[in-house]
Length: 241
Image 1 (cartoon, rainbow, N blue to C red):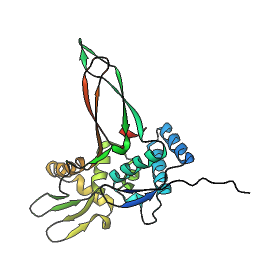
Image 2: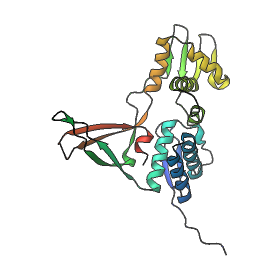
Image 3: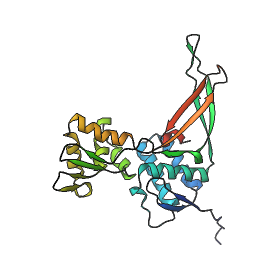
Image 4: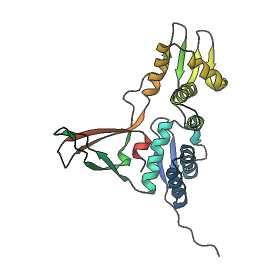
């Protein structure tokens, strides 16, 4: 006779960038265990795989491809799954760096964060259409979750940056013809990025640096020296506890 199974609750969410509506369930103990093991291994590939598997398993919509979602949507989505699975509040710790009598205070401050209150900051977002010359325009797009897998094994920060920017080009327009990123080998797109002038490269990089991101401002006062801190935390790793 088969043992009884406990029904798990389901929830609905609208993602902040793509506006896709998803029905999902919390992750299970075995899925949390796999994630914790991956985090303990400090293997970025294993962590990415564990997060991807949780998102695939917990997503109840058949028409949602997690790999194609913008990275910030995935981060926001994962935080909400984590909140419904483990708890909405995480305990964060920060060291007070205020100088007292020529010495760093060093006191450890604790601050609870309700991860359901963490929002996606779009205040610095700029136009995705970037004019490089009088004739040449590049249309950028949000980086998708699948891009992480393509970047993990690259050798250095410069190579990662070129790869990310190349993947984020939706099309290049030269005044006569459109060259679409999805129809062009990624090696050619990387070569295009590498051969930009420094000025034009910075235009693409500026778009990437101002993408929407998870962001929360923490206000706290050191209980040792009394100094007030306003700390901005960004990105999934800041809330990954």
